[in-house]
Length: 72
Image (cartoon, rainbow, N blue to C red):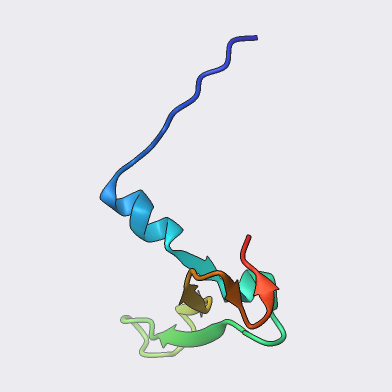
């Protein structure tokens, strides 16, 4: 089976790898923030056309340790 190794070094990957997802490490201590948007039906005006839930995880700049938890 052939194996291909890619060393990706771009600005986007450096920025993405500089942060650690706190919610994935400890969701009880760092819960995700959830927002709810309810869109009305333009034809009837009722608010049952679409309900959108947006989940935002908490991130922190990657350092040696985050609150005593080793970074992954």
